[in-house]
Image (cartoon, rainbow over all chains, first blue to last red; front, side, top):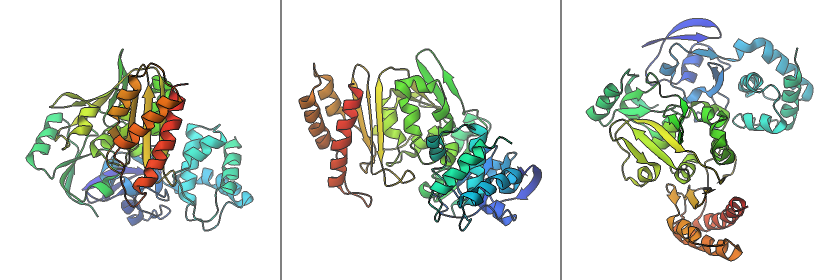
Length: 150
Length: 264
């Protein structure tokens, strides 16, 4: 069947199967910043925003996104660039595999709770795993990003 | 990949109910967070998104929560936070990460009846009733004891208002892992204790509750006796995550902590 979907503010009509997950549809349509990790809701690297809320795209049926808004990291390019600057300065980046999902979750935290405390940042990001850096440098970078009101 | 013939999102409860009765391979999908591990095959997968079941309503005696309400929405609800000093919200916040709680629904978490669920022990100690389309209302405890999940549509849950103290603890290797053991305790004028991930489905510790509720004074001796009764009654077991012996040590330790917290 065909679904109408808004991806990064662009309206699209996409042919899908009833049992296809959002991650498969996005990657098939060249949104390759949406990464496949555990494929069972545990690692968070497939995170996208569904109507501005972070969700694991490996567990959302694409058919349920009919007439909904999806945002990948390309859709928040300016914010992702700001965050990338702080990630670079704090040495919070190694392989980069988790960065797009991390950026989307952090952006969503900024919308929901711009003055998040240390514990609130940790709790919000608990579903986004990073296999290489540890989390200290990322935490510092995220704090600086949230503090950046420009 | 999960095998499904088709996906439908009907506009009426009758349509959903008839589909459920037509074919036992027609299944309702909640949020879909555990679809990959819980369902391999369905003929027609039925979505409830067109039936306005995503809501939280406050009535005089209870809160009514629509079955399609995401866990995250409940967690952030300020009115729900008045229940047992935020016990319900706090317990929900321990379930996986924000991304999963944005899609997982209260109805899906209940109807899945997953043994590892962190939500089931919490619901059984709160005074919760389930509202179904055809069979009407039943208590969550009755639902938990049913051998077979009703082939009906869960519309909403009703959580009675109550004051008192609550305790919830999930033991797991990481925040994102399934629980090795989870424990929920509330105290109003009575104690209610439930244990989940035993590894079997959540159990209300009726004998332990009765024992505690029959005591005039709760002192250290009474607590130790209650813990002994709980260990006997909880019927803990082994699985790949932990042995029965380890679960017993955990229950002993966390139940003591829980009871001390709720008798403050």
